Image 1 (cartoon, rainbow, N blue to C red):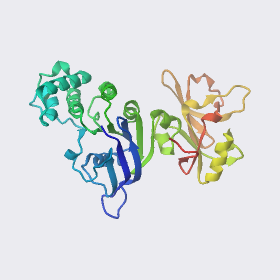
Image 2: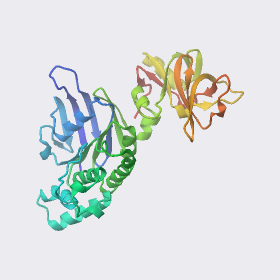
Image 3: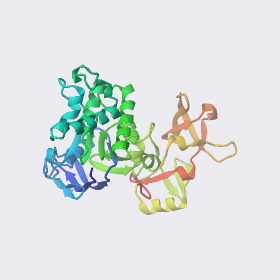
Length: 359
């Protein structure tokens, strides 16, 4: 296992062209579970390929612990890899597939049997060890591929490139849970690429959110949800994402199309010093209905969706769209919905960056 350091790392596929990866400086700690999350084309697979050695960066270094591995080939980096499509030998038994990386390193059969049995038990494959891989279901084959990546104890890291894409949706949660259990038991350094926020947030200790080749924020799932450092993070994390409203400052209030929201005075002062385009952000679930005698914001309601345990209100605050998550739709009146933005839950962004910073 290794600490992974990205030292002034960047990449251009064409010299002098646009950056596929913009310059970054990050440390991923030994034994951590990290997810690279972002839309297609954001650079996450490019970054994974650089870490694995399939691609050499045009700038900067990759270090595993104290070792500079930037120019080393994948086989010299001592890593495990799991790809989107299962990489297995169909004619071999499940046992022999799992044993292959160990036997390839001339390890003793007693150790091989013990380690294969351990990994098979973690992944729920113990009942099919003697069967040929070609006769198994797609999810079982992907479990074998996961097991081949995890079976070695000496790897610096295990890298996953969207490993659950080909798995039926109702089976994905099982494999995510298995991966999480395996990580907790083996304490491996894991790096997991996905465009699915649910996969990232349920798997990783820390999530690396990327956009246009840039790392926007590295943080725990809770930090990304509660204090997104960039408006894209707030929009991308959550369903629906965070509300954002163009606003102006007047004293310690944000003014949104004539409606006023109280802010923490220190936040308002920091935003005033930051300048630039200002936006107020708040999660749909943190907006609450106003009491009858309480000063309130007035939302025009366009649509109400009953989603079982809550109602999702879509509407407008002034001319700007808003979503509100309510425990029940009874608070909606004939004139719309009267709400309060709690001061402690409202965040300010200047030119898309959180005023006061994020984790």
